Amino acid sequence: MTAGRSARGSTRGRGAAAALASGVGGLALGLVVAACMRAPRATPAWQNHQAEKNEITALSTQIRDWRREAGLDVEPEARAVLQMRKVTVRHAKAVCPAGYQPPTACTDVCGLADAICDNAEAICGIAADLDGDAWADEKCDSAKASCREAKQRCCACDDPAHAAEPDATAPPAPGVTDVTP
Image (cartoon, rainbow, N blue to C red; front, side):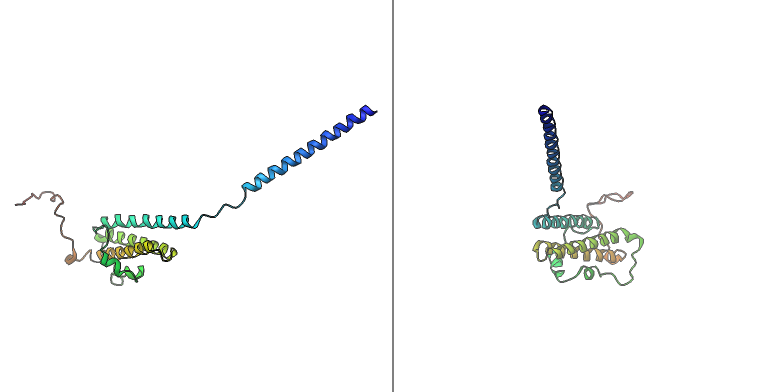
């Protein structure tokens, strides 16, 4: 009987040890899962700040490309940028007379002007979020100056008095011979 008891006792001991081991294993697994599910860390403020500056750079680059496409210099003049310091984007783009509808021939340049002004609004919104960042404020002012200049180009598009001079470097039109002395 002693041999039987000790066989049963050791069976019970093994069962208790197995139950304890599976309980500890389950607890460990639960802790691992809980650790993996914790809330993600917040992005550091400097990374958010830099991401906003990168967005301004991307929007400014688009404006430069659109200015070139519209036949404008890549950057507005410094004087024009300074004039935009206390002006809103809404005021900067209020160049055309009320109710102005550009003719079909001006659709491209006016579309570029609208896109430039949209980017100016986005840049100035980000600059406001960066509250006092001199670089961002300068980009906002430059974007507003670009908006105003592009809108001026749009409104004057169908005015022959404001038509751009022909590009002297462009090849002559078909059927025209070069008569340069």
